Length: 345
Image (tube, rainbow, N blue to C red; front, top):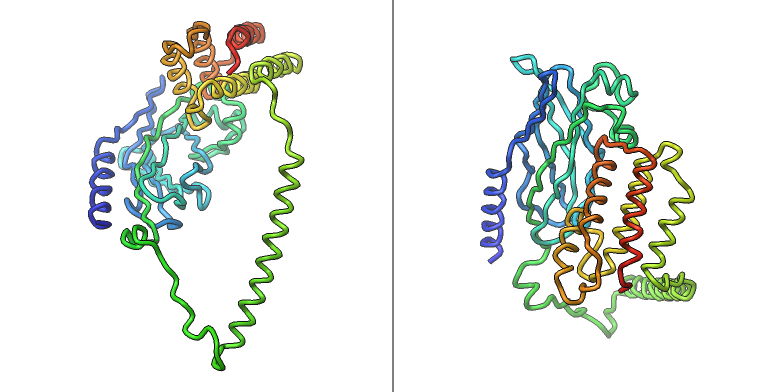
């Protein structure tokens, strides 16, 4: 049965890789970046095993890319920072091989989710202080902090990659239950006293750890902060605090939209218990637009204006759009009015 599952997972992964598109980025100057050869080093691994996600970038002269330093999710995390190597092609381009070492922690079928990379003119990145002369990969953290300093930057999406993580237990063991074998000599003169004393020592140690942990958990539970009485009032208070701080008036327009988007997301997520942080803003707005047709959302205001503002917020957070401060306040006011007119869950 395990062999059949592994074969099925291999076939699914192979079809997904064959259907993965090659993305190309073009610039006005004629330079391009194309993504190809997106692969995982293994299609099936054991839990806790390492697997490498790799892809190839073919870059024209004068082009530089920004890639995330690491990839993390609930199913896996980066084992080490991203690494890359480069070679020159016959037509004068540069071929960059990018690799993310990952380690899986979730059993079953998982996926490395899609993530963005960005390509820009190298001269702009060097002028902005995001890279040094001759670099092929710029500083991801510097670019994400001020993307507007490289107007030529364009986003490419690395598609998701499926992976099967096998359990350390056989299917028969998991279904029948794993039972420990009894001690061969529990009583009698042939007792192994060193082992017995060791068991007693670890038993006392375990009891002490359990007691200490239980006490710490009770103290944490007793001193836990009280939840906000009303999610709607909490969101409105957060919007007012953001306007009072006015980071957009100080030049941090991206931070202003990021906080406003997070406040809106936290409120929308409590409207339906099936919604949560795992969804993107676009997915969350799509769910909300579909939900307003349900009877339990009959009193919810029209979500069209809210969707428009959230889409604009994504463009500000992940693109180069930098609206004026007055426009940002008008959009925040529109979102606040929508929240104020929504019935609290």
